[in-house]
Amino acid sequence: MYTINSIADKIGAFSVAVGKAGSLILPVLIITILVNVILRYAFNIGLVELEEVQWHLNAIVVMSCLAYTYQVDEHIRVDIFHNRFSPKRRAWVEILGILFLFFPYTILVSWHAWDITSYSWSLREGSPMPSGLPARYIIKGVMALGLSLLVLQGATILLRNVAFLIQPNAVSAPSVPAKKGSHHE
Image (cartoon, rainbow, N blue to C red; front, side):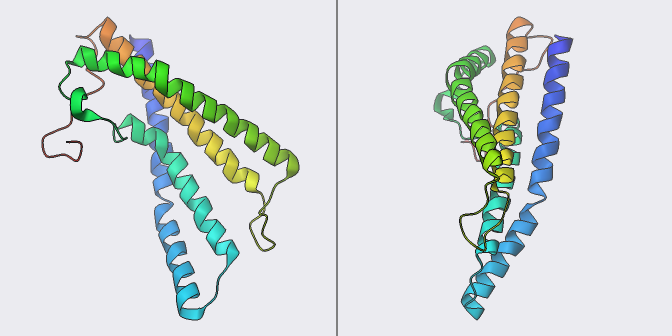
């Protein structure tokens, strides 16, 4: 179990680092939006470059925080039944959900994101707008990386749940019900 937990811990730590780094972009995104709004509505100046920067910054924040959000169990979950399950049943639901829902979807989307990134790179794709940003393949690569990290985080959660089922006393339950008064209720 030590190896499984060690691998899971390393992937989890990487997800946290990427998520926290991505969250540092939020102030820049907010300032970009404010500048864009002020220029547009106060001075009647619309800049395509600024609009694209805010879309790209938003994509970076979302893609970098996906795996972290899943790791800390802040993703959308139907908790009507989940909170009432025993820890073993929650682990089984998580394992089956990852294997039959999460992995097929995220692996497929991640695979296609890498194809799209590769194609965009081969074209040296830029914005279709004359004054838009160049190198659109970079943001597509960020999306592919974020989705790939999400797949890895799913593997980590799968490993932790399997470890819990194999040795429930040696490993803490990976999926705990929400605390009273939290936003999960």
